[in-house]
Image (cartoon, rainbow, N blue to C red; front, side, top):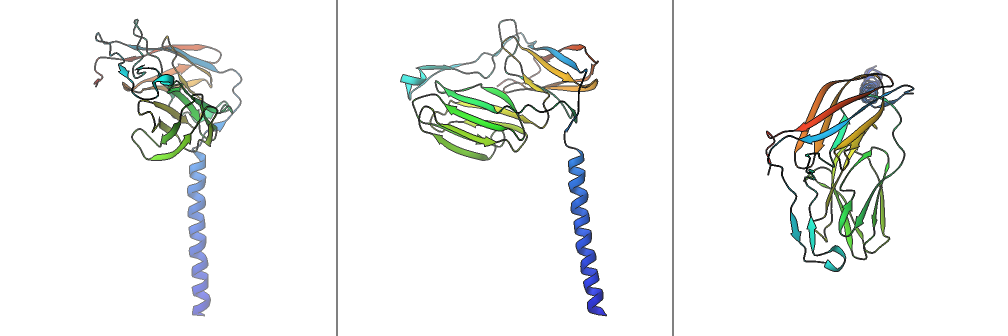
Length: 254
């Protein structure tokens, strides 16, 4: 009898473990992004601007290696604030949106061109492919970190022009890109689990399209200036909401 009771007890314990695992797995799935048909969505469009009087400027560095292909000087892409104080390369996204349009299937592509990562800032989507190409006739590496100053995710050599590396994006958040051969090379891929994320253009403009009607929190991330946000942005069906995301002088600049 004791043996039978012990076996029943063990089976109950195993059943409890499976129940807990199932519960937590189902709970985590329930919070994932759900694709729905968005037949008459709205847009959020606007600009990213800098309001301070003293506009931080990118610096020019003298290069010492592979100058035949890389050039003798490099101007950084850390700020990219125009004369009219519009900011390029700002990642603008909707925070915690859980339902909406399908995620794009196109891979995220970054190219080594004249010893720089092009584009310098881009967005990607979890589950999609990440493709890196070398268009220079010199050795590059694609050294990817899990976050800014984080742990190495992978580090692969691209020994010649035409070399490629393809990986699958399996995490969300900011990935930092570097090249061990050319330490000035730096870039970022901001990975999301939903499709409502874009990068501001040369005029600081952006458009997030086909959003289900509702109220959203819009956030922005800039490599040097950090984060800003705008709450309670209303999206109406078939209409565009215009906003300004502003980085002000209160930002602590390096």
